[in-house]
Image (cartoon, rainbow, N blue to C red; front, side, top):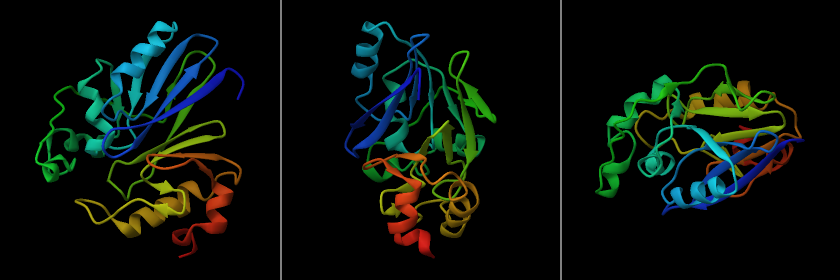
Length: 205
């Protein structure tokens, strides 16, 4: 995609993927998900002249929000996951014995989020893994958090998750996209929708 570059990093104890979306024309940077250990990477891009704008959260489990404590950037979140920020049982940090509360208030997601003058993310609500899980579509890229993985889908054995709702989101919101779209998940390698349609056992149900 001309003018846009994606840099990915797997960080923290959960090997969570964070994506740095670079607007090369305007030297602007948007971050998708914020695992722990992210601050040093943000600093590296600032030294290269990129201005970080904000963080887009696919959902609000600990492994995707822990890094918000390290970086002082505004962040966007779906309103149905807002409660997770203040509830360690919902964001799953209580299971680890280190309850996490994010005090800062998020901007609530709308249909489109701009990254400079020429590019924007389309916000697609894909509930199931959490009530407020979203996917961000940027042309032929889809950042889907823990909704869809290489050969798998998101867990639903956790508070407020819903397996049938997750399958509905996949069927109605993701499987209708172009087959060659690149899938950037919250964990593991990137893939394509076409590859998952052929090989992912959960998409055959």
